[in-house]
Image (cartoon, rainbow over all chains, first blue to last red; front, side, top):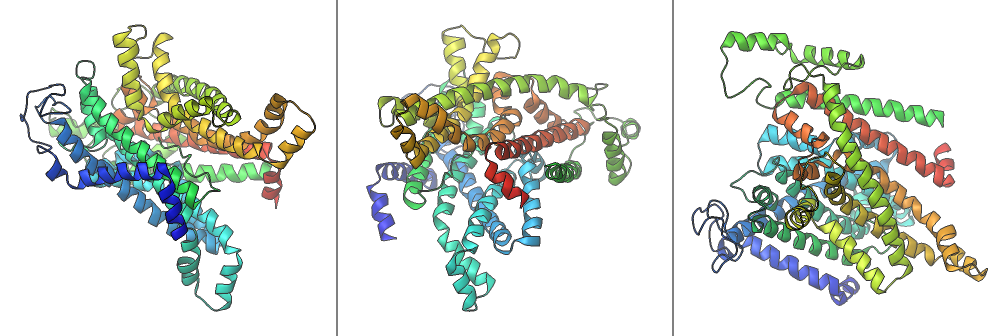
Length: 282
Length: 308
């Protein structure tokens, strides 16, 4: 582990991206502290003003401060990204590990469930879930979570199938460990590298998906201010007031870039052989 | 081969049936109905409308009668665009989406391959650096931002291209570019990684030591093998280009599948939602199937493994 650490801290891309993401997380968590105004406080400045002194990113149609809204938006966007990725990690790992380790009937049943979810159009799920549980955080979480865990399940299944044949697993069986112990104490810890790498690529993909859904009006609704929602609001008047769309877009772009570099750096160190990360997203 | 095909066909039909059932009942669980408007109808009229469309019958009865119609090739009429068959709406909406998706696929594949080969071939040079810079931006820039920037530049500032709609050829340029950027970047990066790996392998050294020229080694020996991972990517990319272009369709106001899908659900236009869902499912299944076929065609090792 120390070897990884020293390798990581020599990697410039890792330091650069970790720094940006660290700052971003601090700003997001401390939004009430760092933001000059509340995200839904109206008429704190002039309406539709471009960036001026006191309002570094300008204001929107209701005179709300865009900078404050983007800071609070970082909370929502990052929370959606992290929560859905962790959900996908847990669901996918358990399913994939059981299917890959036991094989046979289990594999068939679990993988046909995975295949069904793989076919479900994300757009449809997003719409249905937001209709069922409302256009809040939970609906978006369910929609993105339900369509992304299958990718993780497929990855883990393939990895576990390889690991199953390794001598250390056979040794575990020989000394009488239970299947549960072998899977969770021996196989999965060995697969940490590729799993962490796939997680770092999953998070930005999910953030992007959330912003797409919010952008077309299916995600979080105003006065919530996820970056996609802000871009959606800004898009309507983009020809006259481009700052309302450009700043949320830019915030998203920088976040995506940082996650991307982080993922690349982690892959170089933790999992040099794999090609995870060339995932598509919508 | 036939056995494999049949097995996949049955599997796909089961998946589709599941998809249709799940969507049908989930959709009905959602609050609101197709004929709820601002105006509140008298109860008798509401009851009459519901009776006309069979909405007053039990849900399972409705489902089986719908499934029966679909099995006979009838997707029914839309609730919202009254009197228009769902098949007709889907046909009209599919055209722009297919054109958009196909053109974007063509561009992203050609340019992606060129950029990828260039940066692997000229590794560590200015070319490599710029190609990978474009690729990173393509993956990380959200498509609505790319689209908006293009519109601001080419339509508002320069005034040479139309900002929206899907009519003349010129109006296709900006949406196609916007949609192509992300897959282009993914293909370019994938090509570069695989090609770099291959260029370091033994058989390439052998080819060089036989005295073959650079271009012969690259195009005749290396590129062919580099295509395998790219073909596996093409399935999901194609599917996402056709079904996932809803953001681009929103930015450019294109009356394609994504737009109709979103409005149909918002309107609770049950027949149209079901028709669209089936279509999306079929597209995804076909793309996956084609990838599997292409895979076994290119790499004979997979074929023999499937036989075992």
